[in-house]
Image (tube, rainbow, N blue to C red):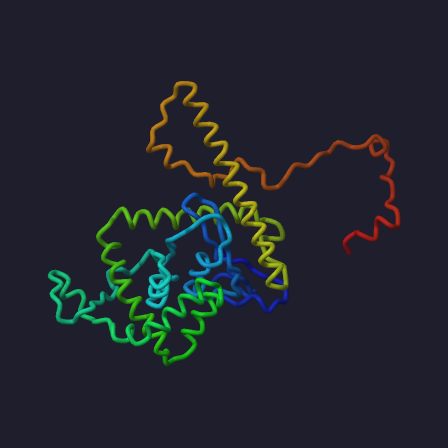
Length: 312
């Protein structure tokens, strides 16, 4: 999600497409297949998604144990495929240009049958062997939290001439991406499952937008901690909406079944706890007046010690 940050802050960046003439931030957030949000990263501007995609798995602090991340094409690269494989996770991006993707083989002389013409490029497995120990150290550092994933990825990509370790992870990623592509192209249900999860994310963003309506939906905190707190609170309230809807959807289903109604399974699986038209996002206002006000009198004035806490 993108938010304009109209205040002067170093933790925001320009992007005319999303922020116009202002600066802004991106809230890179993660949701489970049960619609709940379990982690979020506040990013200045619109840095590449792939830099932060691993942090949803490595830094989340919920009771969930996610093993697979689904993203759009922007979060994809050979390096990310390699790091996911190295850490034992499944990376499942929706590839907009799957037909133009490069397929890699391990053995240049092997006969892959109908795939021979498709996989003409050979991955450098020798590079992986040479840097295997360094790859294991990198995986251990990420798993133990000795280094943040975004910092590690930026470091690996910091030079125009990639290090041997970077090249080795990329070579591993080429192999892993090829295996993923074969499955992605062959399995229609798999592609549909990825698209369904991405649609859940877009629908959750729509709920968050409806909730975050105050001050034009802009983030006005100057420092990163404040931005994270504000967007963390937004995630919490969005989760509360998901929980509320889930409880009442189940109550409605139980009531209908008790009344003898038949609930089709195809209809039930399409129910979403992200509907929010029935939720009052603006609050309620009361116009009940105290008796002295109805008689034209003023409200009691605040005492001096009370006004000290008034906002300026």
